[in-house]
Image (tube, rainbow, N blue to C red; front, side, top):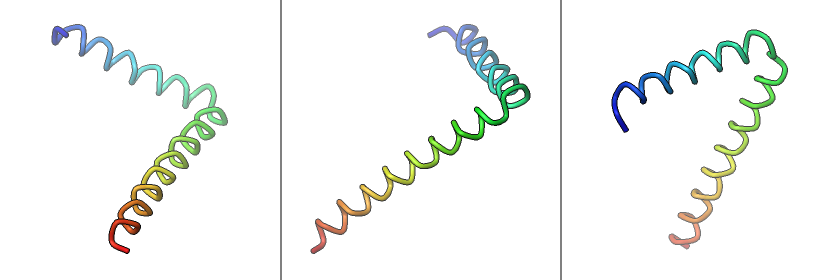
Length: 55
């Protein structure tokens, strides 16, 4: 992907995040909570996998 397109998409994503947090703070908080919960579940599963390997 050309560098210019990547920069435009990155800045567009940043602008969308700022807009989303500024005008829909409840929705943004729920989204970040869901992402955090998914990451925790992923790492918990990875830890359980490694624990099973060692047992």
